[in-house]
Length: 415
Image (cartoon, rainbow, N blue to C red; front, top):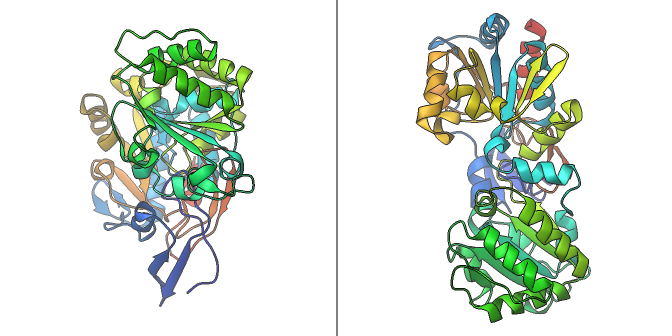
């Protein structure tokens, strides 16, 4: 067994205690990783080939064709990035700027508002290491880490024995699930740990809980046990270090973040609470922070000379829906699988470039495909964990494929 430890890029936890066994230059066994991590680390069942217009070619020609497409486009779209190294993301931003392009990522339709609020210091946050060592009250709100991030509860949140939580989940931690269903995470939290709310009931529950924290009798239009709500408020008030793990169940339910801001402000006037977005892709947070440093925005950007335009009209969804882009480069994403067909079918009508280690539905429709190494397995780099901590990545095995950063660098050079 290799004596080094590696980072798993299977999700945004970026677990850094992964052991591997390598024979004949090939990875044969993976230790410590969860089921998702093992599947990811073992690599692609169908690796991507270098192609131009469906014909196999070498990487050099594919890179030249990709650069030609971007040069000839008036409004190219550079999209994806959440499964890309930070180095590749930074070059992608440079390519978008040079080509006066649109640039956006998957946070545009998931955790973007949460990450943006944290970066702008509108929401109090902490690190996963703080959670492991200090947290005594955990709220899984609209999230189900037992399935989405299988090592979350065992490595960071509920089960670990931290420096200030030596007695662990048995005595030192209280876990609560707020969700529309009884998830696997709710099962772990126990029968008294689930606060089940109706679909789209998050805002009302949040406001009722804010009232309860203020000592008022909470009111909800749906039938919810007020005594239980007051008991929950009592638990939150007693927390020494509380953490809310915000999932898409919460994010998609909120029409705006004002109720969340009011709730967190009230919580922190009577206790100490932090919020961490349950990002899925391993470096979505990295793209948000890299773009923010460059432009002051985390996503939905359009470059226009020296001007930086920003707004919902520059999102990947709107740009494709309105057919305002005339070429697209997709890296580290598969929009034909993840976005509505009515929107993404337009990608099949314009010149499309895909950069990925694996074949995807999007790559099958691309005019140019360029394979890259699997980050964290075949190439190194850096990524930013869901809690904002930067993590260095090193390769587990060698490959002759270019890293995603090198592919982007070569396209930039051709431009």
